[in-house]
Amino acid sequence: MKKINIAEILRMKNEERKITCITAYDYTSAALVGRSGIDLILVGDSASMVVLGYQTTIPVGIDEMILFSKAVTRGNKGSLIVGDMPFMSYQASDEDAVRNGGKFVKEGGVDAVKIEGGIKMKSRVEALTNAKIPVMGHVGLMPQTSPLWSGYRVQGRTDKTAKEVIKDAIAIEEAGAFAVVLEMVTSEVAKIITEKLSIPTIGIGSGPDCDGQIVVFHDILGLYDKFTPKFIKKYANLGEEIQKSLESYRDEVINGKFPAEENTFHMKDHKTNPPLKRRIIKNTR
Image 1 (cartoon, rainbow, N blue to C red):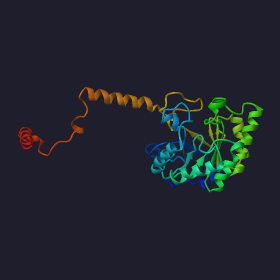
Image 2 (image 1 turned 90 degrees about the horizontal axis):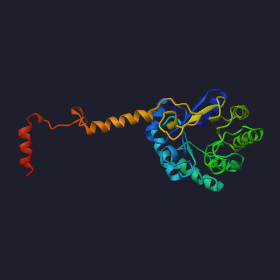
Image 3 (image 1 turned 180 degrees about the horizontal axis):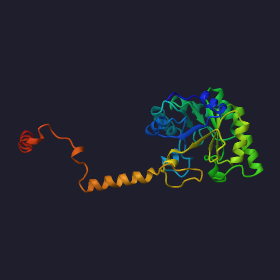
Image 4 (image 1 turned 120 degrees about the vertical axis):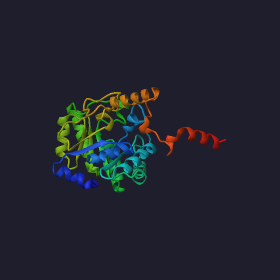
């Protein structure tokens, strides 16, 4: 797979080609995504939940996110790779945003970073892009702060909130972002934003009219069983298959069926077992 760059992502919108995106957090998943021909990987702060076991995305830190990013960039050389800047790695100041965004690129090896927020985060996007760090925006539902205020609610159901989301998306484009994620935005509002912006919109729970779609790796493969969002389609139920495989392994070990002969190594003259055994015992006394 030829390496996807930001120019190609922008060209895909202009040519009305849908952009495929998914999360990944380690070498193995990143390699699988690469072989699948998916355009963009987000090293998402959703790792906080699906990898580290927290209840929200808030606890994961920048050092952990950079570690995940390193693994993903080693596993995938074709997709555009975006590092998700975690809670409080950019909110405090433009300087924090640039310093930590630079760490993602320099140490994590990512091609770009993602930050949440609209108008209020406009200066952060400007600071990052001025430092030549490409930025993907994120408006609508914002998982890093929504649990602290209103919870996980669909955005744009009323005229007032619809206008707010539209203004946020426009502000992110004006600030220099190359794309913007629309999370849990009503499909009507997502369509308006997609038509208004010259940069791609990447939907998650925001309907079919976005320029691209992104999902969490563990969600579509049935690997995360705490809950499944309404907007997710499960393409497999690997959690159950893995569980069955582990139980079969457990049972075969207990019953002496594993390791079998084909899983076992022998000395070259194993056919002379009795004399060989005596010889080994004699030589080790």
